Length: 323
Image 1 (spheres, helix red, strand yellow):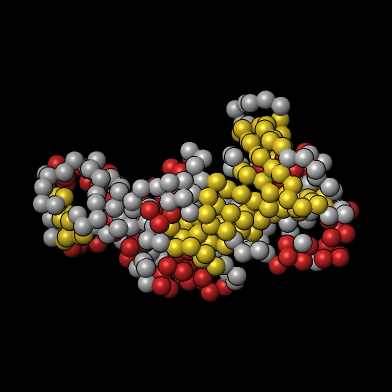
Image 2 (cartoon, one colour):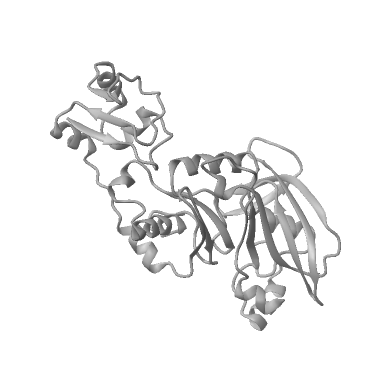
């Protein structure tokens, strides 16, 4: 027999989902059979598996040690998390509570893996929490902290990470319903004078990792919407702020390019001659696009610390040089 107490990071999921993570080698049919026969109980009572487990709940497994370990048979490997935490430089957590960590990502770091051997902000977050003792290697078997939104590799700024299952579910719900305000600043080519709202449909070519705008909706097209307004004009460039109403890959970059004012440093959608000039003069090596601010709606407990909070990222050095 073995008893397991549900911790905060595991609470909020269905019992059957938790069991599948706890013993990943067991088939789903095994759990339903054990639940039906009361060989697995929840708080000492018979359960069906669809119940949501809460912090402090006790799951009792009337199974032999050999059976449990045979079905577990998978120990979380933490080497890549520790490597990411120790080797990816410049990442800072600018806000933390029990459920959420908001990180400032430098340009050049992936938000999530693009290939098997990559190290990304996702792995850094787990390594960071392991280093602080906020999660153990054993707990990674049933819940793994992860980033909730993405930035392009060469876009810098704020990324939201979930430290608990409740945090992951809440942030996913807020992002899906577009309740979190996501604001970006950028330097664009030329003098932009008027604010505007851009809408359209976007298709991404996975082979080239490039997007294009199309005139109408379709099976592969995603609706995109961006609001933008100039902040400050210079002789040959404009500092612009944009609110990302929807969130799709390369959305701001393609929308700014369509206005005739591409993001400076963006070789994929911008002007090579212009970008080469800024690279030579200011040592600009990536697009000057910065996820600068997050604005949260009014929230109820246990997310009261985030309620109506505005979180700003520190000004990047490249932006400071050009202002």
